[in-house]
Amino acid sequence: MSEAAKAVFTGVLPVFKEKGFTSNDVVAKLRGILHMKKIGHTGTLDPEATGVLPVCLGRATKLVGCLTDSDKTYQCTMRLGVITDTEDMTGNVISEKDASYLTDDEIRSAVISFTGGYDQIPPMYSAKKVNGRKLYELAREGITIERKPSRVYIRSIDDIVVERRDDEVRAGYRVECSKGTYIRSLCRDIGEVLGVGAVMESLERTRAAGVETAECLTLSDIEARVSDGSIREYILPIEHFYMDARRLDTDSILDKAVRNGNRFSCREAADGMYRVYLSDGTFAAVYEIKNGEARLCRYFLE
Image (tube, rainbow, N blue to C red; front, top):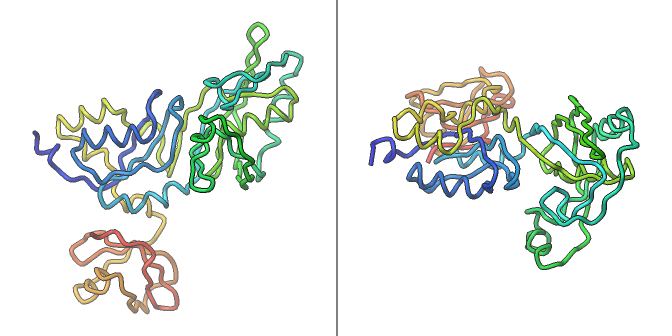
């Protein structure tokens, strides 16, 4: 085994999830490729979806919740006039309607109308839990239950392209949205507004937690980078995700307080969020300073 394979990595590895893998599949494969157990992904992607999946390694698993909560951007294609039980093309068709009479302007108007906040009912085929059970587990047993809507925010929808082939009508669009938004359900809801139904046909996540497609590696890319010893060049350090915060370097006197996650006095610093580094340059934590007192927000040492 190479020295790179024996190493324990810390940071965020930008992965491009390919079709056919679940997000958990990616984590399982990375445990084998990197020979480490402490790995977590930052947001579920359906097996048929592709795209950006930031994966946290080592101490960076403390970032999972924070990165999962970030806004995301997707490129989606939906097919109009079809309704399925899964809200995508993998499911059983419930109904089909002619959508060819809809004008491009009508379709674009319906898509754009979802910009802003709205209450979205999650799909039955999803990992959302109700009473301790994932909805897709119930759905596979033939059980459909009432789901409470969740407030989601569509920051923007643009690049809308309508395609027509024979009697089939599709619409592609780019959407930036809040955490917890199901794009399949957004397609469903747009279809309802148009009166013909719609399902998601393809989906690629193009941005998550500030990571974009161009930064990502496929699983085979990662294997190659581990083999040639260059994988560290692609792992984003924890502090990369806090670059909006100011930097604060401590001295040897304050090191103990920071290592223990304790408060400390910092009268000379302005109020705000800070990336705090130990005297040896090690990134340790994120603190908030208010009225000269620094309080721990997130701790990244072992």
